[in-house]
Image (cartoon, rainbow, N blue to C red; front, top):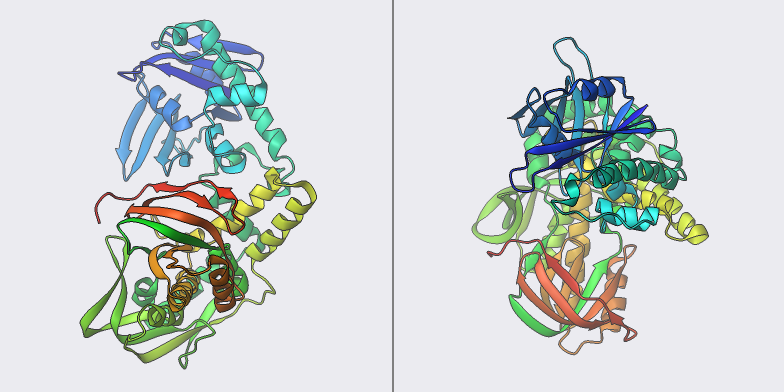
Length: 500
């Protein structure tokens, strides 16, 4: 049996006002918080507890006398209905909700957050509960107000519709073979979209844990642990313009990270052995260099700058080539090079297979839930290799993470260099796109030149028009059109920092 739970709380103090429970055919409303025996009994009997925005409702429950809440090591430790849970907010809708043992080694039922699952697998737009009731169930919900929230009709609505939406969710995802047989524990164990990619990789490569231990031993033997961290850098975001330019064009790399994973076949490096090597521009090589141009992280942000005295740095060969694209006068002397010889035999990496399946599904049935699932797997396959916080996992592999980001850097910098050779001015870049002042250059001619330069990778001109850059990751591109002259929506990003 499933227990569906919703809460109402004071909008100002957040103090609990009611608990709504749906168990089988019956709805129960609890307002007397001195007697929670019924909540505890149903909770213990449940196969799973379903909530919508579970961290909030768990937080409300934790404020009731007899329940407990403690913040420890960036995680909320909650004691709810007689059981322990660890709760951590990860991003907008993603979270970790994990049953934890008590002194008797008892584990409570999994808590499943429907809001999180819906945002990952179905839709990430307006997914408020009332919106889904209207859109998915075809009913006009009772709107929230302090007065309505105290009525039984409103309280019943939210928990009854939660159950209906749960089964609507299961119906929508039944076309995804990988999740069709998920247990309640499986659903409760989904933290972010990357969890699905992790599960898929574990099924494909069941020896990942052993391989990671072997890789770590190999890194220690060759003394490259710190070198791999130093050579790894995230996406290149640069704002060369602070202001407005009327004649701009934006060129986006098509599936930058996913295609690097595919073309470099990085799954081969799930297990590797280091060997001394000569500098090579084609296969990935970790290089120890003397350089007057530096890639480095400051406050977890990639910085690129020149130095007067030569610096000693570890860099991937792709980043060395990228530096020469940005700075033709760069002085980079290779002192030593190491090649991570791959020990896994595979014709293609998993994301290449997911990309093929995604295209097949879209061709046959359009942009279905299954198509979006394969896209999700592909998009999250990079991040799991670079995970170091809050802890490393069996998927962490800084060789693969370094290869992916450095190769993407090279693609981006080759585009910048080519645009400059056509008389354009580089104004902005953001991981997988560049914005240039055309200075009269034909944007279609430039697009063809960029694709010739970066092949087998590709890019497209997504926007031509006015661009205003405020700071890193804060810009608006407006009054734009595509290469055929058709109007395109404004490009807006507002999640950066105000300071430069």
